[in-house]
Length: 153
Image: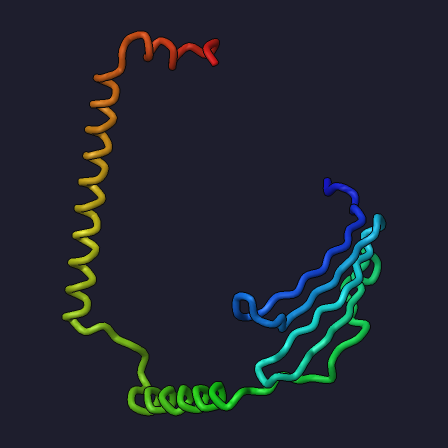
């Protein structure tokens, strides 16, 4: 079971740089019935302030009560990167319409890696067994009796 909602109020502001001007703000409060209302705002990458207010309650869930008339827009850098990625992707698709097929050289290296991984795994298991045997050999009979007795805490 979840504990009953507790009334709360909080607010904060933060910036992108230490000791810089805040570029995002949050204010939120909740009541004992589980109703939460708040506002958050931020400075978007295009240097436009965006503000959203909301109410969330057990009956209706999360509802925006105020929202900036804003649809995200790509910055010039993002648009350039997206177009460059699309062009490179198209080059790859048109150059080789077949799915990737491993060459014999890649298959050999993959098999070698799997074999080495298994050898190392077995070595680690042997080392762990040796260390456990050493630990047990170095324990005193008193310690072994203490560890095996359920009445010692």
